[in-house]
Length: 350
Ligand code: KG4
Ligand code: ZN
Image (cartoon, rainbow, N blue to C red; front, side, top):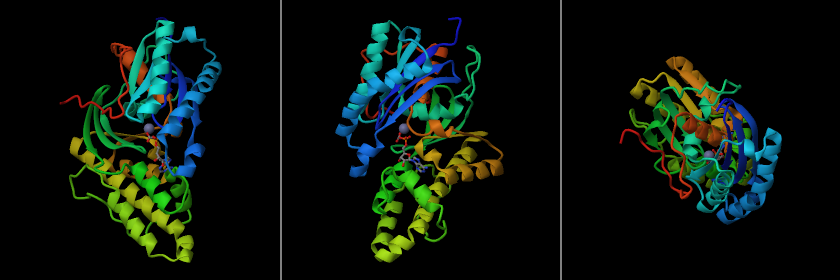
């Protein structure tokens, strides 16, 4: 192929209907996202049935919009990709089936992509166009993936060579933000709401617990934090609840950020890696980004933060993984491939 390959990817693992068109690794021709947040907000979280029905109605217009913005015809696309898991089965099926049908209809290869690998590699996605042959190196390092469903520390030895160092035993970091916000009467999704409210508060006002902080432990636990917030909240009067809300948010956020940064740096210490890559919806959080920058500088490691537009769910990160698969000569995925709501990130060392 003389020109840079064009990949069209679909992401429907949860509540965003997303389609992206990528040309080569660094040119996102289009990355369209139709968010269902407003639809799920009254329920305080994602309702699977509502999500899948909306993917069904939104996918076609999002797909058409992406192609139009990208200025490419369907026949220009060299490969199709879709998230095959983890996520909500009924949501995954919509995007996955659509991409397989497109691949079949156009006679082009299909690549199933693990949503977690999409987040994991998003800090490596070039931000500017490179030549067709310039496939970015997935450099060895420690990665922190922090989203609504997952909190993972991963040792990256290279593309497709991942080893899980630690994960959460209970709630994911984003889930802790979302559940904490719900308890405080803030709307879904909780992360951005807590971050916004925290700006007027003090991170030292309340002492929330930090789970599993003994040296060497790379696992996470956020359920004690949630319980501690519940007990504190129950003891406050309505006036206190209103007046202390910014302090509660700032201290709650601090407890999550501190644990994420400390464990990431502990993973760096244990592995001896000199790069840290951070991704997932929670990595939008400015307090987390700032603290990681300070910690990385202190430790003398390079910090790769996923660009904000690629932190929360999007299809550009899925297209990027598919492009890397193509570039590394991976065999296309069979059209018999099914979605897997519990798809794990494969450990290459086991
Ligand atoms: O990666 P993502 O879009 O979806 C999953 O794969 O789960 O992450 C969504 C999560 C939600 O829990 C949301 O509250 C959290 O990311 N989030 C944030 C922020 N923006 C999104 N958490 C903290 N601070 C933010 N600014
Ligand atoms: Zn995600």
